[in-house]
Amino acid sequence: MREGTSLTSTVGQFEASSCDPQYLTSGNRLARNTLWNLIGNVAPLLLAFFCIPSLVRALGTSRFGILTLVWVLIGYATVFDFGLGRALTQLVAARLGTDQHRDIPGLVWTSQLMVLILGFCGTALLILLSGWLVRHVLHVPVFLEAETTWSLYLLAFSIPVVISTAGLRGLMEAHQQFGVTGALRIPAAVFTFAAPLLVLRFSHGLPPIVATLAVGRVVMWVAHLFYCAKIMPELRHGIAWHTPAIRRLLQFGGWMTISNVVGPLMVTLDRFVIAALVSVAAVAYYATSFDAITKLWLVPAALLGVMFPAFSMTFMQDRARTAVLYGHSIKLLLVSLFPIIVSVIVLAENCLRLWIGPEFAEHGTRVLQWLAAGVFINCLSQVPFALVQGVGRPDLTAKLHLIGLPGYLLTLW
Image (tube, rainbow, N blue to C red; front, side, top):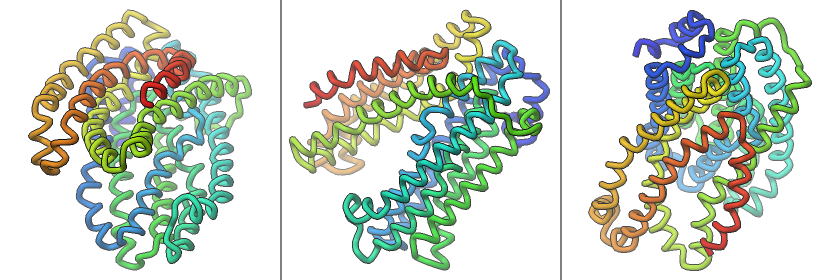
């Protein structure tokens, strides 16, 4: 794994490859990149496991609850890029596959400028809604209203930086630089949980913590920009606005946005319906099993984050290679996840009894077993999903989501 031992060596290997699609989509490279992607996805979970208890004790339940909302909002801030980051990954990877390198700098700078404009719109929207959210939506305790409002203001100004960073990461992913993105993601995850603990030595207020997190996001943006310039020296020649790229970016990103909105809605809406029609206790039994088994989504997320640009690149040059990568992806997920799913289904009751207690085992066993089967099917379905989007047809996945949504809602009811 010498590829990932340092950021400089990783970038150097890229420069030596001269953007060769065969090199960028070789089996060994894709395997290493998948491993780096998986490490980058798992690291935040491990850090959360160790840091959260200390934060809860130091901040108290109410302040910690607000901090978790800040983390969620930082994570979902990328919704303001309207799919442009993913669009950039696909368009750049496709051009690397056809040696159309001249268009790439214009695509990158145009997408970044568009993302910044959208980000500042998100900033203005969050600032305008902060007071209403604090007083009428989040039901924040009165003594924390001022802290929460100022925290949302600080968070609002970080939105352009967060979504711009996502776009830069997409550029590196198009070049299969997952060693670099993984090496950057891990310190970012460390900072997300360690920074609040460091700030607590000086203040227990939320604004200093959120301000520190915002500064960390700016530092990560600078680091991403620096390594993008290393990967593509052409970006240093000046900022360029490429008008013809706007339509392609918006078209791809718009369809991506539909999937990004409808897909998560179909994942999270069920627990609200259960609460309304059954009981809040039933939500606890359901959501606990759901949150546990869906951690397996980290595996296809790591694999297909790598395969998405590989599909885009090879489809433009060698469709037989695309078919091979598709088949390998299905087989890898099947072999790695099937034994886990079978074990969960067989041992569901015992696992819940040992983990939480007999009451949860009694009410949650069947839920966990059915969800395990569903998650397995969903993991496999993500491969054709990534392929269709990777070859430039996000409209198909968006239309399938829109067609499936009414049936899902009716069946759920």
